[in-house]
Length: 92
View 1 (spheres, rainbow, N blue to C red):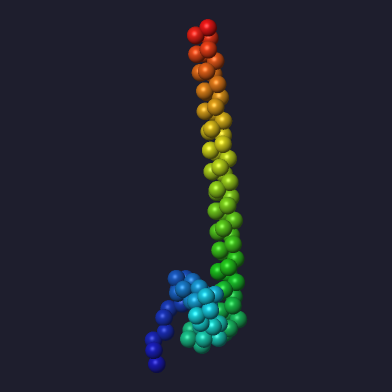
View 2 (view 1 turned 90 degrees about the horizontal axis):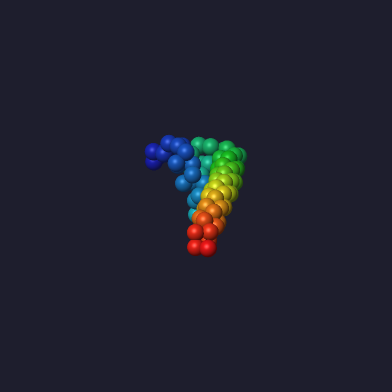
């Protein structure tokens, strides 16, 4: 009998991706790891929820970064406006 691999987070993610890619089945994974199919399905559900949260966080970070860049650009525009006004007065 082959030695079973530890059911680590890395191993879980690899196996879940194999299931999602349809290169293995929930039943096969359950048998190979001495788990029930519902335990494997719970891992898949947790994996997908975590991925969704990660994508939401990424979108939120992207939004914050965009807003920060807009604020900095508006400040630069303001500075350029003031400098332009000063140069116009100096050349008048």
